[in-house]
Image 1 (cartoon, one colour):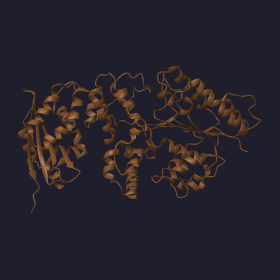
Image 2 (image 1 turned 90 degrees about the vertical axis):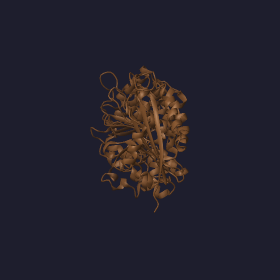
Image 3 (image 1 turned 30 degrees about the vertical axis):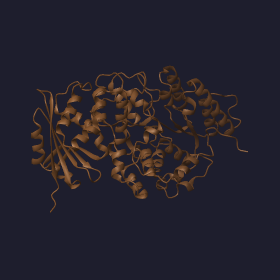
Image 4 (image 1 turned 120 degrees about the horizontal axis):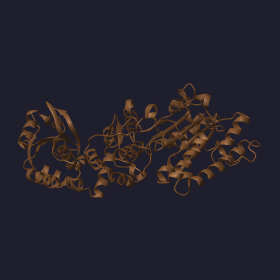
Length: 528
């Protein structure tokens, strides 16, 4: 009878990929195999892919395990898929000794690093003794055992490791344990002739410390530098469009608003795959991602007491970008030195996205979680803005300009989140937040080209029966001038294509009197 194996060439290594194939929402990412094959037994054989949770890291590992594992037959699983088009497909199919491990089982909260290392190593040595009898003798050191087998038999190994970074996320503050774990990985992986490939995944990039890295041989594919592996983690827009055609429940436009926005350089934007599949299954867009891990960490990070952090979060919540220096982040989630390190951590965790030195909230799903967190934290004026947003929208519907001005006046009195409130830019940020609730009923377009110019905000109704809205903001000018500009430059032109009537809302902030002024006029679609 075949002995039980903990990690080595498990005969169940095809099961996870089979379940993925059986899914109604299967998206073919098997071209990744050709990319990884090109790195086997090269100087680029150490790979670390870091992505937020539920971005397809584990399913990719299950696919690779099904493909590489010696002793199982999985050619049939790949029939008709893109992997079979690769020139090296048959060369590596079921041809390697695969060690497949989820480090969370050994380096989570329950065990110390030393206990996890001892438990994993002893089980791994047991596997090796079963597979290669009469070679190891009394040897217990894992790296030594692998090297002995390689020297005696010529056999080499592929390591597939999930959640490599769990010890840093779940055992925060345990510096000695972190370094002990890193030393274990260095001893196991660095400059070892018994390795053909090491492929690790996690949320955080490879840990850096001191003046270098214990694992500096790894080629990393991160949220900051996704590089060639970008299309294989998350859904591309073409893939989401195809899923929409298959399901015929939701439009690409709806899914784009809710789940698009993760910038991947030359590869464009990537959608959150878990949320897309949940939305299509349920026939409804909402915030599904938070159900997979909870957002308490978001609240923890955005309340860090660093100069400028709160202001940056507020501007991003209003739909704006902010600059960030990502170079200082060292992967420690409990020893941040400044706001840039906090923001960089949020990029890796999937709450923000990054491109070219700028960072922003990627989509509506994450925006709502930022807003919910801010409401819970009672962030002064911002909380007031978000809570009063529906009332402000109702006052706008009623063309109650004095009420709109008064509500904006009340939130201006205690503008703690901003160092200053003395520019049109800051005024726009406040107005965007003030109308936050409108996104349930409207598609909001900021700085949108329309008519003969660029409007500050167009609000296009998502359903019939409600008016379109055009917002124009002035700083130290007049509300009359704002409305006149809307009319003169025909900003309502695009809104009138989807609405029978449009409210023209002009808002001005007078720096001298520190008062807001508002005028609301109404126009109707001309019917011939």
